[in-house]
Length: 171
Image 1: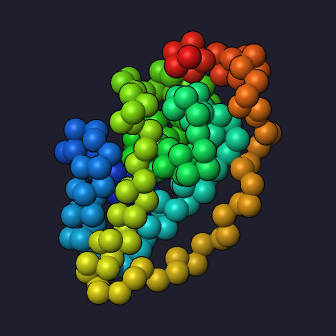
Image 2 (image 1 turned 120 degrees about the vertical axis):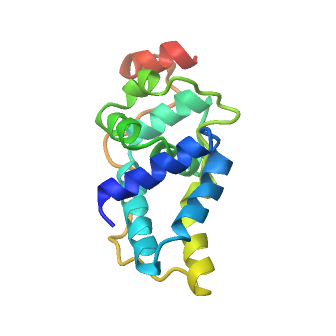
């Protein structure tokens, strides 16, 4: 599976789910279960690579602003949600996290920003296809700490200065 096919699967299942993260995960599992096991493993590799790429302080700060606070787990679920928004939003957010203020039209912190189930979709599909757990993906170890420069989430002045668009929209 190449990157284009990965994003097409993300986009078509998100669109069919009407943007609902739980429905998106269910439809993603159904779609992946139509593939062969190696393609599901490839999808999982693409997903994990993007999940790890988004493990950055500036992305975490954006999540913190958008969600009104983001613990370790909340940030993990946010990164799954970010991938689920598709290539344009994902790559835009990694290029400049403050641009999420314009990349995401509608955002309700009660229902958006949390797509934990998307992170398990490939595992569920693989197990449905094979009856066994998804094997080790042989990826590089994820970073122990987020990439980039630490951002103090408690310093409203610094957060507002670094992320003016997000700060204006979500605080």
